[in-house]
Amino acid sequence: MLELKREILHTDHRDATVAVLQTCLYDLIDLALQGKQAHWNVVGTQFRSVHLELDEIIASVREASDDVAERIATLGVSPDGRAKIVGEHTRLKSFPEGLQTASATVTIYSDRLSSTVDGIREGIGSVASHDPVSEDLLIGIAGRLEKHLWMLQSQEI
Image (cartoon, rainbow, N blue to C red; front, side, top):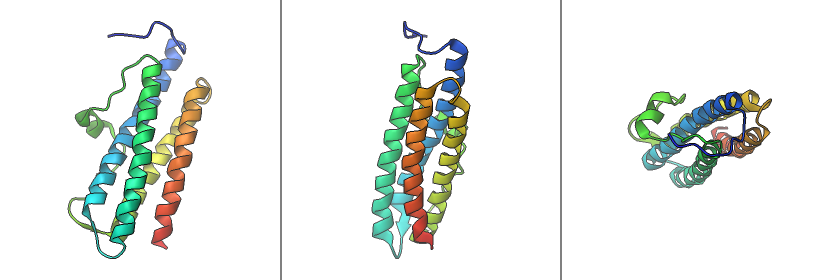
């Protein structure tokens, strides 16, 4: 396995940070894929607004997953985004098969988005004491995703 020549963090801290980041990466990749599943299968009243909003969320989630993967690489470890591995390690529930009403889509995807944010917040606490750069990265991602969650859940009222 190839490694970077300069060690950014002590090995123990690096390994702990990478484990947290990799777990968040699995969830972010899955969230983006589930977002596309939702996007393709939403029907009914509010179809267009939910369809378009999902694309906005997915773009943010993909950017976040790229940022997390690049942080893992910066720490000298190869990020893993292979579909089979993501499927085995994601903490998210699967998106249901078939067409979903816009209302159901909002509820189902909000649940997945909320779970992802919870996992990221957990990760923030785990890396805070030894890697403020990764902590800051995760805080920024949590903030962006929480805004999407608020906007999505506001449709359920």
